[in-house]
Image (cartoon, rainbow, N blue to C red; front, side):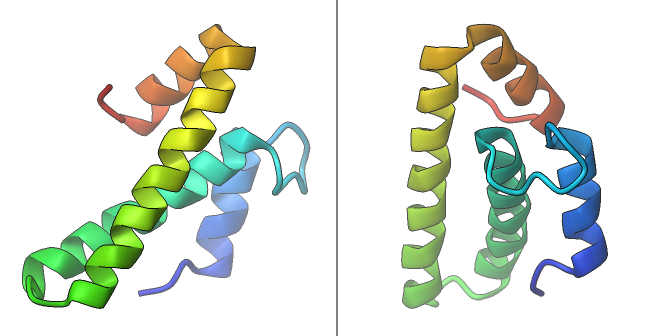
Length: 89
């Protein structure tokens, strides 16, 4: 199930720096986390879907790179994001 417009607006409102901020690392991490959780549910139902597995791994590594960037530039924001998105380190 793709990300709905309402859900995306909600995430941008919660994590964005402004009302229509969609490019900041915090928003990108939140959107990726949402898509990763949806894809994880899909993979539990379809364990042999290897092309989706590849996409999931790509999203996870992109989120990891963004989290590393945030950690380098603002460690407190990094810890806050981990807590709010319930990502384990």
